[in-house]
Each structure stands twice: as structure tokens, then as C-alpha cells.
Image (cartoon, rainbow, N blue to C red; front, top):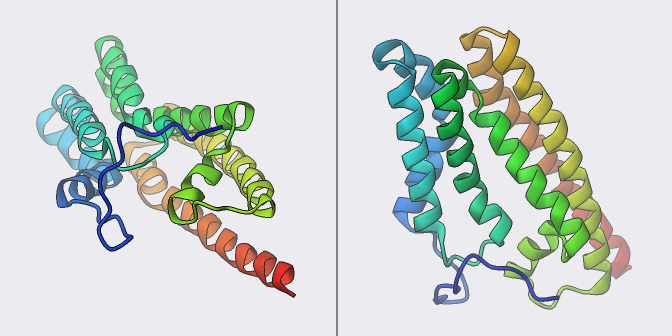
Length: 203
């Protein structure tokens, strides 16, 4: 089955896609959101913070469209922006903290749906760099997608706990630092496992 892409893929020069500055800047700002929110909420209140984040998420989708990213991942920020906007109407202070919860949930939904619809999310990402992915790679990427589903579920539950019960400082520390450390450890561990699997297959 063909991959669902977020709009037409932009032309590739030299065989490599170069992320544009606007996309990178928007991604960095949303990644740093917990730290920005920690100070901004106290300075200007929760409503401007949530509204600004929703705008950034919409812009992130707009600037990222057509970069060959799987549709589920490309639209996840838009879904999160909608959920945060709705929650802001009910409880603006709580909405500030629910960004990591909603983002983990949206990504989990996209990853899990790809397991049923196919191809798996990691396979779609892998085929951006390796279009002729072998059958062994398809099976491997499906397993990695399942691992990421488990991670997103557990990380989302941890984010939910910090949103409901932890102080703003603890929420910031987990969602702005610890969660990314865990994500990096999982990503790095998967790279090591991938090298081992490929070496074993080549032997």
C-alpha cells in the first residue's frame, strides 16, 4: 500500500531534503515549550501562552506540508492545537500543561493506526531514506513501531500525571527534559539494535 504523505513531496536536491529554517525554528520552539510556559504563564497568564502555542502548531503544519512526512505525523500538531484550544475554553491553566499529553496521544494514535492500516509509521519514515526497503526491514520497522507505541503510551501517562498532580516546575522538568532524554535513549538504543540486526543479516 502506498504511503500517505502530507501533500506533494518537495523537490529534492542532491538526493537529500534540507529542512527549511522556518520549520526548524518552529520545531525548536515547540520542543522548548515547557520551559517557555514555566516563565510565560507567570508573566502574561495562561490564555496568551496557549493561544501562541496553538498558532505555532498550525504554522508548523503549514510549513511542514509537502516535506514527505507521513500524514498522521504531519497532522498531529493540528489535532493538538484543536484540543488545546477547546480545553483553554474550559480551563486555561490546565490547558497549558496538557500539551505533552495531547501530543503523545496524537502521535500514539498515528503510530497505532499505521499498524492496522499499514505500512507501519517507522517503515514510512525509513522509506524516505531507503525507498526499496527489503522484507526483513518491513518486519523490523513494524516491531520498532510497536515499541514506539508502548513508549508513547507510557510517556503520555507520565505527562498526564505531571499535568494533574505535579507542580509546574516538576511538570517542566519531566516534559521539557526527562521525556526527551528517554526518547533519545530509545532512539539511540534502536540505532544500535538496527546495526546489530543488519550485521547479522549480512553475515
